[in-house]
Amino acid sequence: MTDAETFLATARQVVTDEARALDVLAAALDDKFVRALTLILSAKGRIIISGIGKSGHIGRKIAATLASTGTPAQFVHPAEASHGDLGMISRGDVVLAISNSGEAPELANLVAYTRRFDIPLIGLSSRPDSTLMTQADEHLLIPNQGEACGFGMVPTISTTLTLAMGDALAVALMKYRHFGPENFRDFHPGGKLGAQLSKVRDLMHSGDALPLVAADTAMSDVLLEISRKSFGVVGVTDPEGALIGIITDGDLRRHMEGLMQHTAAEVMTADPTTIGPDALAETAVAVMNRRKITCLFVVDPEGSRRVTGLLHIHDCLRAGLG
Image (tube, rainbow, N blue to C red):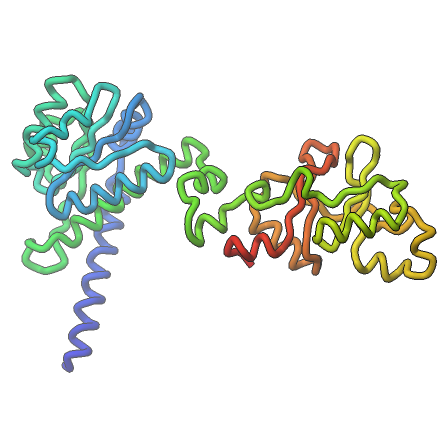
């Protein structure tokens, strides 16, 4: 067998072993998971995650996932906890302590602190009879499936299962709280993800920037409004401010002969495509692409069609959409 074949065979075996262990974990989940989840939901404060070594690295990721999906969470390093950071933990919090063996000595002071001040403790370990699990109020048990290294010393399968347990907690909490894309954006305003989750109201123009005219406005004044606002379009509104039509370059061309003898209502395209302020900007881009238009008026979603904004495709492109 060549080196390349050996490398691939080893990699496939690792992935296969971890996938098989994940199946075992999924089948083993029971009412202990429900009780741990219920304890987290009852917390008036934060979920404090702690662990040492590879368990600590996984714990940091679990804390970050929980925090970004609507469950206030923080990672506290157990060694630092013994030197003052225990003060970060208070009544109302719930502690999730992670140790595959359940015997990490670095966790001893943190566990003792939770017992002293009656702070709920969830233990996450592969050994139900370990010190951590016997001290914990609730238990998340990782099935002992060995490690992918073959001699049980390199945290691989155990860390994968721990990470999966954390993901299961986070997603279950998300679904219980109906945490959706509109909430997700609040915690992820930056980068491509933030752009994808932007709402129309975040990007639209409003107030004095809006190109609007009344239905009986003379076309000479309509042209001035189009020129002044620089969007290449103007909205036509009724006396209550509801959008009844728009005038675009195409409308101007179609009415070129005798244009100045018309009013806005006589030139406009009635019942234009609009969007609500709480729609995702990505949805607005899809509408503009499908309709082959460059902007959308934003109207009150309650049915009044009162104009609240204008979204141009260039605004979306600048935000990283498109």
